[in-house]
Image (cartoon, rainbow, N blue to C red; front, side):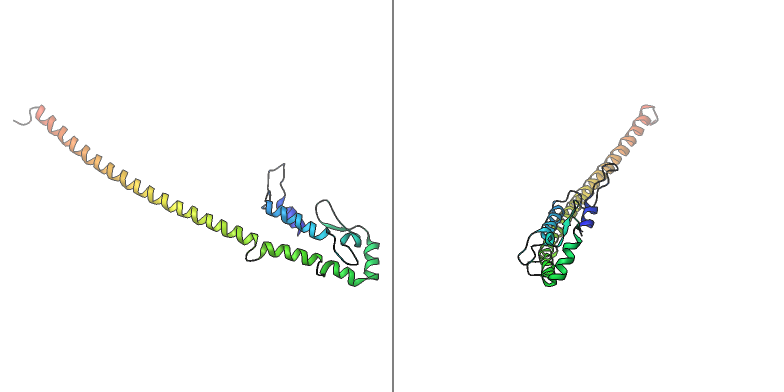
Length: 171
C-alpha cells in the first residue's frame, strides 16, 4: 500500500509528471498514519515490529533488518508475534480503523466525493444559466440584425426613388 501511495504521489522533476495523488494532504496524512500504525509501540510481550527485527525504510516500506530476532520471536512466542499483527491493539486493527475512517460511508473519501459532485452540479447549473443568457443575447442580436436589414432595405428603396426623381425620371 505504501509503495502504491508513493508511486501515485511522486513528482518527476525532470519531466514535470505528477502522480494522481501528488500534493494531496489527505494521502500524505494516510501515508504518515499507516507508518505510525505499523511502527508504533503496543502493549504485550512484544512491543511492536522493532522487537521482531522489522524496520521502516526511508520510503516508508517495511524490511526485515534482523532475521534472527524474527526467527527467535516466532520460535519462543508465536502467539505474541501474532498479537503484534492481529491483536486488539495490533497493526491490522490500527490500520483497519484508519482505513475505515477513509473508506467508510461517512469517511473522508465519501465526503470528498460528495463535495466534488456538489461542485460539479453547481458548475453544471452555471453552464445552464450562461447558455440561457447567451441564447437570449443571440436572439436579441438576431432581432436587431433583422430590423437593421429592414431599415437598410427601406433606405435603399428610398434612395432608388430619390435617384429616379432626381434624374427626371418621373415625367
